[in-house]
Image (cartoon, each protein chain N blue to C red):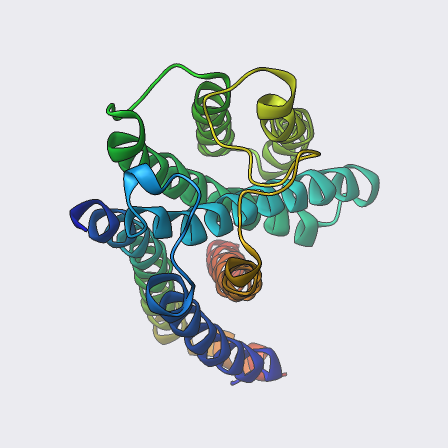
Length: 231
Length: 49
C-alpha cells in the first residue's frame, strides 16, 4: 500500500534534485569570480560553495542526532532512535565529503593535501567519532540497549560540533574563516550562491532523512513479520 | 580546473553512494518482506486489517 508520506518523499526528491542542480550551476558558473585568495585561482575557489554546504549539513545532522538522542532517553520511543541513526549516518557521509573536498582544495591553496591544523584535525576526529557511533550500533544486539547506548554516545559526540566550529576562532588555524568579526571572506555577489547552496543542501538532507527513516521503518516491519512467523 | 572537477566528483560520488546504499538496502528488505508474505499468506490478510 502506498502511504501519503511516500508521495511527499517523491515530491521532496524532485525538488531537492532541482535545487541541487541549480546550486551546482550557481557554484560553477553563476557566482562571480573570487577576489580573495586569488593566488589559488578563481576556479578552484569555487570548491568552497559545496564544501561549506556539505559541512553545514554534517553539523546539522549531528545536531539532529543529539536532539533525537535526548528525546529518545526521555520517551524511549523507537522513532527517535530511528531519527538519530538516520541523521548520524547521513552526517558521517557528509563529513567524509567535507574532509575529501577540503583536502582537494588544500593542495592548490597550501601546496599539500593535508596539514595537522586544528580545524582539520578536529574534523577528522569528529568523523571518526561518528564512525564509532555507527560501529557501536552494529556491535550491540539488544535493540533497547543499542538505542540507549547510541543515544548517550550521540549526545556526548555532539561536543565535537561546537569545538569544530570555534576551532578557527580560538586558535590561529590555517583554515580560512568565512564569517568572523573581521568580516566575511565572501563578496556580496558570492553571498547569494553561497546561501542558495546552503538551502539546497538542507533540502537534500531532509530528503535523505525521509528515505533513510523509511528504510529503517521497513526494516522494523520485516523484523516484526519474522517474529510473527517464528512465533 | 582538475582540482575543482575532482572535488565535485568526490562529493557527487559520496552522495550517489549514500543514495545507492539506501536503495539497495530497501530493495533487499522489500524482497525479504515479499518472501515472508508468500511463505505465510495469512500475514498479508493480517496486514490489510
